[in-house]
Amino acid sequence: MSDMTGDTSSLSESKGGSDAARISEVKAWLTSQFEAAGKQVPSFDYTHRSIAHLYNLATASQAKSQAATIVANDFRQKASEYRAQAARVREILESAGMAQESLPSNVVSSAQVLANVANLLNIRDTELSSFLVAMGDISLRKTGVEEKRAKAQKDSNVLLDYTRKAIQRLTYLKKILAQLEDDVVPCESQMENWKTNLEVMAAKEEQYIQQYKKYEMLLNRVGYSPKISHRELVEMAEHRKELEKMTKPVVDTLRSYQDLPPDKALAALAIEDKKRQFAAAEKYLEEVLQSALETSDE
Image (cartoon, rainbow, N blue to C red):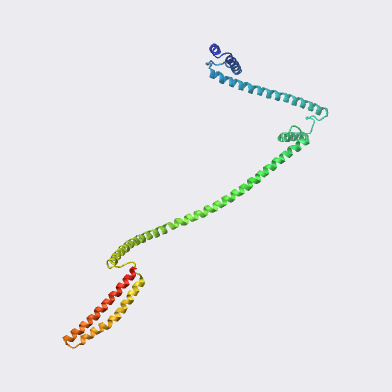
C-alpha cells in the first residue's frame, strides 16, 4: 500500500488534478472490489496507460452495477407486491371458504393447470380476454408456421424433382460412359487400321507426285503446252485421218510397183514420181500441223 501511495503521489504531481481524481476513483474501486473478494489490492506501477484502462473498467463496472441494482430493486419491489397481493387473495379466499386446503383435489389440479397454461401463454392473469388474445397470437404464429412449412415443402418437392432428374441424368451418363469404355478397344483397332492406311496413302501420294513430275518433264521435253485443249487434239486427229486417206492411194501405188517388170529406167521414173507425190503429202501434213499449233497458241 505504501508503494501504491508513493506512486500515486508522484503520478498526481506529474499529471495534475484530473489524473489525481481518476487515480482516487480507480483506487476506491479497486479497494471495494478486492475487499468484497476478501483480498488486498496488489502493488503495481501506476502509469498513464494503466490508469486510463482501469478508469474505463471502473466506469463500465459502476454503470453495470448501478443498472443491476436498479433491476434488482425493481424485482424486489415486484416480489413484495406479488407477495402482498397473494396474501390479500389468500385472505379473501379463506374468508370465502375457498382456501387451498379446503378445496377438492380436482379443483386444485384445475387451478394448477390453469396457472401452467397462463405461464405457457406468457400472460399475467387468468382473464378470459387474456387467454383469447394469447390464443389468437398462437393461431397467428401457427398460421405463419404452416405457411413456412408449406413453402418449405414446396421447395423440398422442387429440390426432390431436381434431384430425381439429376439421378436420371447421372444414370444415363454412366450408361454412356460404360458404352464408350466398351467401344474403346474396337475404336483403337480401327484407328490403327486407319493409321496404317494413311501411311500407305501418303506413300502412294509421294509416288504419284514423283510420277506426275516425271510425266510433266516428259511433256515439256516433247513440246506439250497446256494451252492445247481436247478439242484441238481431236481436230488434229481428224486431220491425221484425212492425211492417211490421202496418202493411202500413194502407198497402195508404191506397193503395186513391187509387181513392175525389171526395167530400171521405167521403175526409176515411177519411183521419182511417187517420191514427189509423197513429199507433197508430207509438206501438206506439216502445213496442217503448223496451222493447228498456231491456232492453239492464239
